[in-house]
Image (cartoon, rainbow, N blue to C red):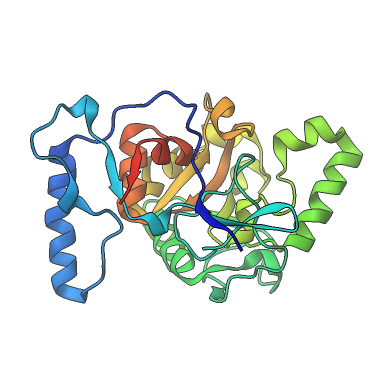
Length: 273
């Protein structure tokens, strides 16, 4: 089985990364965390250039956080499926059809469908716990959020996509719904979020609600990014979705938020070591 690192949107123009000072400050915080829990940081900051022009700097990222794929039955399939930074989009390889995250849990948050215990109420445990903290903080600030749709199996994604094709045609369907195997929902790291102000729907007008504005401003503090932002459709391949949030961890989310990047642009500015 042939293994290789898949290049990530190499045709994009390079965008300036975080300043070295920003990464240095994060490194101090990360070192404190290491002493406390001996966990390995996602970014290898020890390899950051010390005297370089900010415009030439790049994020130094361990290879395990880039998609590793193998050719299977004529299709490129992602192998490191439990990678927290897994890049799943229209240009990536496919998730295995039988992939189900091993650590799916149901976060203790409000759901648009109540207490019904169904597939889409689950997330990977790390993302679920972070979402609980985010919803709790929102609540203390007078913001009430509702989780709408999280994990989605390959089989369920097939049903969702086919229904969209039947309703809008294949071209329009692909602007709004991922084809099976290329949906972030299958990773268990993404959740669609809504509010009563938009009748718990997933609509673009959510961006103008207090809840939508709060999420856009604060989600990164809990490790989530607005995955399909306005004005970045040509990069993400999807229409603007102010309700779709993806967990990448607090450190990565901070970098992406402060640079106004998509996940694709983050990888374009990352160097594997």
